[in-house]
Amino acid sequence: MSKNELTYESAAKRLEEIVTILEKNEVSLDKALELFEEGTKLTAFCSKKLNEAKQKITELEKD
Image 1: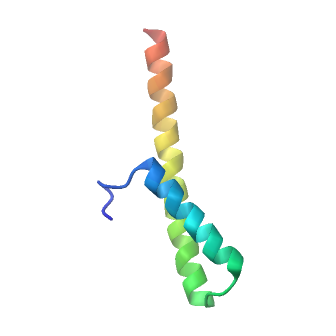
Image 2: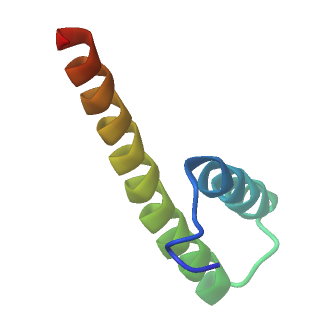
């Protein structure tokens, strides 16, 4: 999935999948680190999207 296709909802869903996989503790250390890195990037993406939405709402409320 490219960055252009990534939505908040799809990122949040993938984060849930990553957490589930990591909680099972059945993957290798290398795979766990790979998943953790992906999760960190997804978390940053979701945080950015939420901040953008909050800013837009604030701007709309001013009008």
